[in-house]
Image (tube, rainbow, N blue to C red; front, side, top):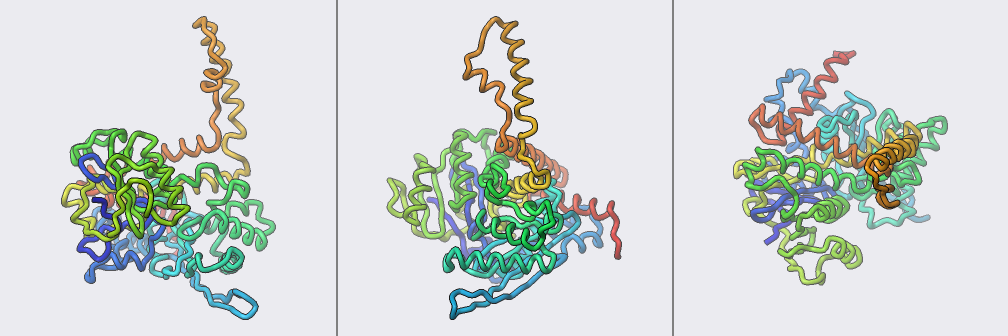
Length: 495
């Protein structure tokens, strides 16, 4: 049986959005992502004696801090949220109706600038959630060596209840508040899409910022996740799901993981369950499938789909987009019950593609039973990594590959000609094109993301071995030490 979202079970595992891929039987792998994550849902996942979302983040931080070797004074500064903006503003819904909108932006750490983090539209947004997610962004950026501090924003509304025109007015007014309070800018704070937002909203944000800052030649870098036509980067849409794939692929190759799970080091032949099927879940499943894994289960908020023979990812994604549910799709088994207990999880590897999907008690139980948990601050960092690439593109004002692609192809062509002359064999036009092909923008983005994930996974593994701890704690130790190094070496003006 596939058991998706967990609520109020002792030591609950909560997959609150688009991609918990978890291994179901003897050969299974697992990720978890971010589409429905909110403080409300996360708090529902907690036992009465457990802390909420922000408390969970702080609990994991405190565990890592104890073995980080960083001074108490530095730790206090790293843990605290630097700045928080809370705004309320009226928005005209129609000539006779105005409503008040609440919005937040938290900058957790400005040890590196700009700060970076998404903006979500959800009626469950609150200040605690925004602060917790901003904290995670700081640690996430440090883990993958992206030179940003962490931030997060949110507007308290259900986007499904508003028209596109109304959402545009709300987005632009929220952005105006950020501009007036100096909470946005290419070198200050750079938002991105999150729950309930996407490229459309990012375009509105960029245009509003540009109106307030007409002299800023780098205005396109004030936000990432934009459409390609507005300065976005190719590969951003699938970046988080691709990063999930790269991360799990790397961990499966580690001898320690193979010993713990009994799995070999390849993706091919593994069975995968994806919990949540939004953008991240879809792309993660797509990359796993294309590399030989079998997707046997997909969980969503209402129901789950299960087929031990494998599920057609494209077909079921299209069906759900049209029908709004898995119900009625093909020959899959539909499982109505969306709640389960952490003690029923059979996956040997659990990947957190969501932010904060597992409570501390659930984490402790799963680790104690030999499960491998690849933590959120490492595994779902593909999005911020490629956002970093987009930001670099905006500051350089040139598409990746534009200056070098043809030069590379010319060099390869000359080398290939010499090889043909010495080998006495001419390649076909198709073979020649394949060999001399110069990297396009999305291929460079994929390459940069893969290199980033490989390095971060190896660093996390090395610290876990050296400290004899789990991978989440190891990743946080690495983040804390890197942040401490930056703040210590740069000095602090006011103490």
